[in-house]
Image 1: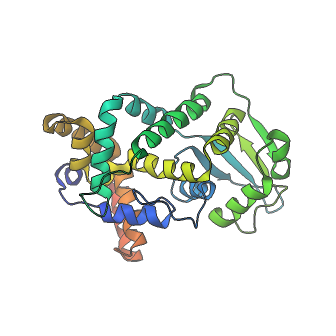
Image 2: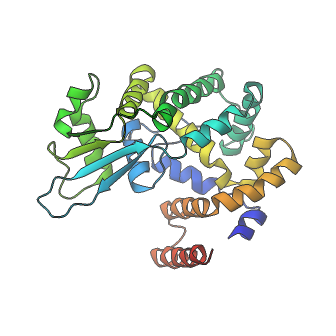
Length: 285
């Protein structure tokens, strides 16, 4: 798998774009309005283990009578993404953004709309500065409360809104109830997420999520092209490609299989066989 990542010259942009479109993250086109940003976050975190802002887990219960518990914790990769972001000078970010835009746009002659680069740069900057605190803050304040009491902990959060997102995207059977429990590793995480929604609004947040997803996973679609865009020279991109493939090969492979599954590129039997092969390889490693 490492050798495939190092030598692959085929573009998988079509698979990644299809995955993004089906999950409310169309880019560079505007995201489809069928999913709001909260549902996008819940879907990616719970169903795909893509933790853009936070991770979301349904904890196991001992029996059917025990209240179910949903655990929210900070994204484990937010610090890494911020570090990568801060290493890109602002003047170079414009070129990085434009080149990735051309790679993913339907026409390579297309350019970002006026003001788009600055807006998305500021969105990344604001989200990182707001949410990284919950990953690094030592004086954490964990919380456990029934979903119905959410409004006691925040003036802007709506329990019904959260329940709808859980019911739609998590598809828990039987449905999650207002008496089931929400667990937070730190209230700072909830405060940060709600603050971003209040300040930015749904449309801006959803556009940000699409760009953050690409910022994190664009290299999966075409390692050679994207690493060259990010690092600016063929020699540096070659050096970083070895590190990228060594670190990201499993996650990259999984994402491509997920993307291909959306467009029925592999049959269910083929995906199971390939996943089994990957599991054996990772065990040997």
